[in-house]
Image 1 (cartoon, rainbow, N blue to C red):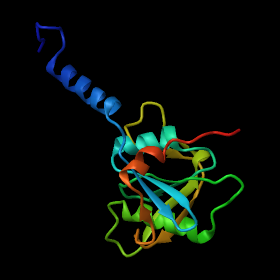
Image 2 (cartoon, rainbow, N blue to C red):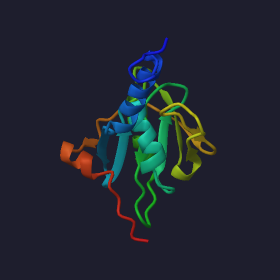
Image 3 (cartoon, rainbow, N blue to C red):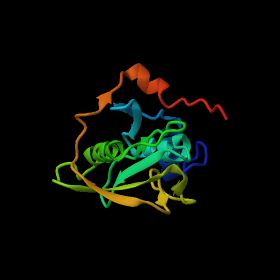
Length: 164
């Protein structure tokens, strides 16, 4: 059915409204600090996940997602010259499990990889990525050891300065 006012059909208007909502909405990134002053970024929606995994993630960051369950993309920021220990990686995976639909499970499988192995396939839906290499960790969903930073920190944390 054609609308004489501007040539758009109703479905085209709906598609345009959805596109504008997806591109104009600001991501709501949740920022945590893990012991050892490691920063963790967590997406709250598909749009946030897309932004985290396509724009904010850097090659040496660590990326986490519950394996086989819908959930947040989680990024553990890398530190120059420092590698996170096994416990830090486990804690980041536990936060990813907590921010997934598998939260109520006793143990959750969480996929873990470096940012360089995460990419969005051409034409994929919002929040969908492909991972070319990584490992699966089994963890209990938990976020009690992570400190959620203030709303002001949320806005500032994703801004990274490249000193290279």
